[in-house]
Length: 221
Image 1 (cartoon, rainbow, N blue to C red):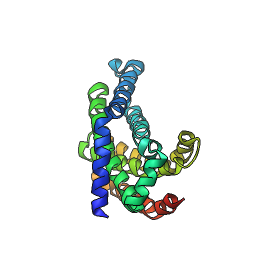
Image 2: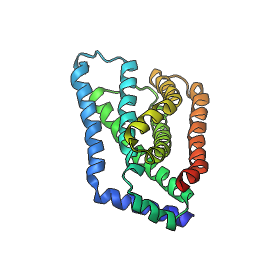
Image 3: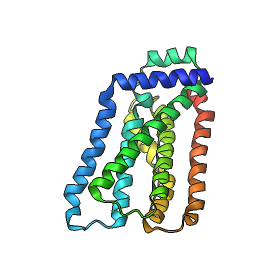
Image 4: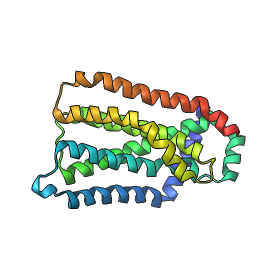
């Protein structure tokens, strides 16, 4: 299965490299959203509170994640899916998608956080904890939306279904992400966030396990 996962990862990377308009579009979306926030909120007059700064950042990261991961299965044509069915196991396919999307989102989230900090300022006092939280959030978003993208691809109105299924599932994860972010902004002792970090890691592991177990049944349908 490892050989299949590596081959599928190479395939996704090559397709992304050939169709660079997709990743460029997501980057443009992130940069445009941050710049609009800069123009509309009045950061020049120091009107942006740390709470608002934190909320806006996660809004940007969340919707960038949806746009980046939604194409995982929605762009795959039926003929290509049948071809995958003959050459690879469903576990290898879902693991390759999760690994690829996690790497892509960690890169995008890091760039978005860097640009957001430059444009909007950075009130974070514990930068290491905040950045770790951003990476864990990227992994959680990628795992959740990858599985939901696979489910939505089986429906006619797939984009709407992905939205309906995605946001209720992602709410618990967002609550812990926001809590850890607030602790990092306030400069609290890292030990205060250990429980939330463990729960967040458990949620990420649980989503990977659910995708690994349930995707074969979806794949056979």
